[in-house]
Structure formats: C-alpha cells, structure tokens
Amino acid sequence: MTTFQDLGIEERLLQAVSSLGYQHPTSIQEQAIPILLSGTTDFIGLAQTGTGKTAAFGLPLLQVIDETVRHPQALVVCPTRELCMQIVNELTLFKQNMPHVSVVAVYGGTSIGLQIKDIKRGVQIVVATPGRLIDLIERKAINLEEIQYVVLDEADEMLNMGFQEDIEFILKNTPKRDSTWLFSATMPPEIRKVSKRYMKEPKEITVGKMNAVNQNIDHQYYVTTAHHRYETLKRIIDFNPGIYGIIFTRTKIDAQDISEKLTREGYDIDALHGDLTQAQRDRVMGQFRDKSLQLLIATDVAARGIDVQGITHVINYELPDDVEVYTHRSGRTGRAGNQGICVSIVHAKESYKLKQIERINKSPFHRLDIPSGKDVCRKQFFHFVDKLLKVDVSHGDYETYVPMLEEKFADLDKADILKRFAALEFDRFLKYYENAADLNLREKDKGRKDQPQAFDKSKDFGRGDNRKAYKKGGAYARLFVNLGTKDGFFKASFLQYILDMSDLRKEVLGKIDMKDMNSWIEIEPSAAQQMIRALDGKKYKGRSIRMNDADRR
Picture 1 (tube, rainbow, N blue to C red):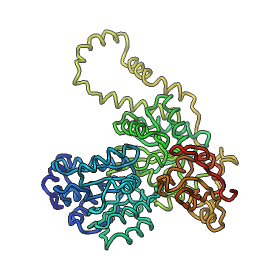
Picture 2: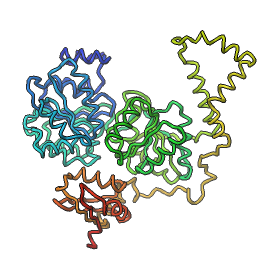
Picture 3: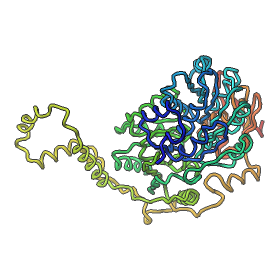
Picture 4: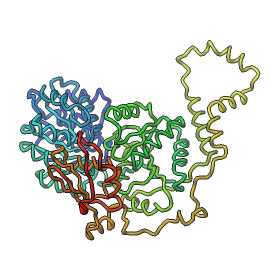
C-alpha cells in the first residue's frame, strides 16, 4: 500500500502528516501529489468533497514555495469563508515544522484592515474568497504579480455562486503563474471553458465517477401532506435519537421559524441564514462543530462551503428546484468513506422531482413509511437502554453509594425499578405520541389537492424548457435599481445580495446588466413584485435603494 513517503514529500511534512495520524494517502492525494510537486504542470482534479483534496494541493504547495521570500507566491481561491478558514487550519497543521512559512486567510465579514496588516507583515500563501480578494486588489493592498501557483478549490461551487467573472479577473491578474491547479466535484461546461482559456495542457485526474453523487449515501423519502410537513420532520428527528445533521429549507424565514419551534420543544438546534451577522454565524457554526448543537437548519446560500465531519443525516424539509442543489445538499453527509443518509419530505405532487433526480444522478430513492408514535417510543427506549449499558462507572466512587441505593430500593423488584427509569426518561415522549396520528399519505387519502400531476416537460426541475420559454418569448419583466459597480458590487456579489434580500431563487432571474450607478435585472413576472417590495426603499451604505419596473419608468 502506498505511503506519503512514496509520493516524494519532504521530511518535515512527513513528520507533520504522521503526527496527525495519517498513514496512507487517499486516491486523489496519491495521484495528484507527485504531479503537483513538479510545480510547473497545470492540473485538474475531479473528486467529491471529503476525499482529502486540501492535503492533495496543500502538501505540494508547502513544499514548492520558497520560505525565505516574504511575498505572496501561492494563491488558493475558494467559495466561502468557512472553507477558507478550514483550508488555512489544515495548512497550519501541515506546516507545523516550517516556522518561516506564513499562511493568511482573507474573506468578507471581518476587518479588511487586519487582513491587510497580516499581508504586509509578509506571507507566502494567501487563501481567499473571490469578493474579498478583488477588494484587496482594487485597493492595491495585495500584489499578485509574483504569484507562481493558483489553486481554484471547489470550482463548481464558485460557479454556482456566480463567481465566474471574478475567477477570470483573478487569473488575469496573476500573469506570472507557473501553474494553475483546479479542484472540483463536477466539471460543468463553464469551468471547462475557463480551463481551456487559462490553463496549458492540464493533466486531468478523476477519482470516482465525475458528476456522480456519493455512493455512500442512502437517499430516502417520506410522503405526507404539506400540512403535516413539520410534524413529519419532528417524527424523523425523534426516530433517529443519535442524529447529527443539517436540515435544509428554501427560505430564511422557514429556517428561523422551524428553528424557534424546535428550540421551544427542547431540541438542540439553531438556524443559519442570510440575516445573521458574521459573529452570530461563527457562534452557530462553532456550536455545531463541537456538537453542542445536534441539528443545524440552513438555507442553501447560508450553508455553502460548510464542511463538517461526522454528519449522519441531511434532511430536505422541501426538495430544491435544481438537481445540482440536491446533490450539494446530500454531499454534506457520507464523507471520507463514511455512510450517510439524505432524507426528503415530499408531497404527492413532487414525485416528478424525485424521478428527475434519480434519472440525472443515477441514484435510487427509497420510500419509507413515516414512523408511528409507537415506533418512535420503541426506538428512543432502546437507544436509552444501549446508552445505559455503555455508561462507564469505573472512574467514580460509586461503590460508596451502593449500600444506600440497595436500602432505598429494597421494597422494589427489578421490574419496578426499570419501569421507573423508563418513566423518568420517556414520560414526555409517551404522552406526546400516545395518540399520534398516521402522517403517511396513502393512496386512499389522495384527494384532488394531493393528486400527483403528470410530468410536464415545461417544468423541467427549474432549468429546462420553462426557463428557455422566457428567454425565447422575451417574457421576462425588467427591473431598474439604482445600485451598480460604483457601490462596490461585482456581478456575483450583486446577485447574492438581491437574492438574499428578496429570498428568491436564482432560477427566476435572466440577464443582469450592471452599469456604474444603475443596474437592470431580468426576472420572471411572477417574482418581480416580491423583489421590488424587498429592496425598494431599503438602505444600502446609507442611501435609499430605488427599484421599479424599468418598462414603466
């Protein structure tokens, strides 16, 4: 079996890797590291998240840079603050025996002044999100002229977030790079175009099936009415007492509302959405990582870049409108070879969406019955018993209390004692589920409202003919807004801002035309008023936003 030593890694890095408990490289590490150690070869690595990509590019980067030179030599670009911090943390562990190597993270939501000071003190590797990096470039606070190595990590995620123009801008501003290393879970056509434009005869490696979902994930779904969706969610959580998972909602309003309801009912849960400050977001993520929170409820935008090991379940409170979004959601579990479960709560009308995901991802769904109240109580009871049997009593002076306990329980037989233990632990569950209703949607229950509709190709899961019809027929509404590039926006950051403010999905948008002081937005007519209500009259950097129908101005 291959070892890290076989890959050509230098001794200081080998010692660090060994101290971290790594013995054998993953497949992407084994294939990528020998190529990247040359430092002069453009490289494309296609592998699912959680397969060890950070070490695959991080170890070679630390070896090929010149640690005696104190200016940026390597640039790692990634989509989100969380991933940026994670990469820096891992690189810091790898460079533990290289005291003269400095790694700096630059990302939005925190003081740019402190980040500029860190860069000016001298740094060899910069890990950055696109928006903050471009801000630093425009302020002339960072010089990329001497960058030799550029790494684009989670390239498909950056594309999904609308960062294509930003990526191309960054590549244009690193003219002296010796090599570009691109890592991605998928290879959409737009990324292929970028690679052809900015990379020279890249060496490409695919680990596993490209564009395939993780085969370690069991895709399950429960069918119920929209009215019973919340109760079904509770039932799923209660039926999995050891759950450590993420619940996805469409909107930040749903995320906050469900989080508040479950918190009031005693669940260890918090919400992650676009209205949180960075400090609040960091607090929530810190609690989730150290498992003070058992559950995290999040919108897709807020959850981008989250990489937490050991997640057992992903729950789709509602199915997303895009197959790729489903794939990214489900990919939060089943990482690094572990098994994971992705659960979806659906109603009968959404059966066509399940078929669409199955067809594109070639991953079968398993329909399960929503557990009954008795099933939940039984599952919780046996979980408690297992936990009781595994309790370690070797570290306490419990023998001192045994005589007193024997005296207290002298008039009770073993069966009575066990019943009292069960009542103490499960009284709430037993009362709550005593007369629990059957939440499953059965064939005989399907009235007109719940009848599944025939598959309509014009509703091709948020991406096909329906969207093209707007483009061909010119049926988009056009909105005017008095925000533009002079306000500090690039197209990606502007897109994310208007979607976060309006709580809409990017699928409702067409072309966005940005000028210095104003922008014009194409949007499906049914969503236009929602966006106007969300932005018109609000404040941005102290001035009022004006948004209205451009065709009626």
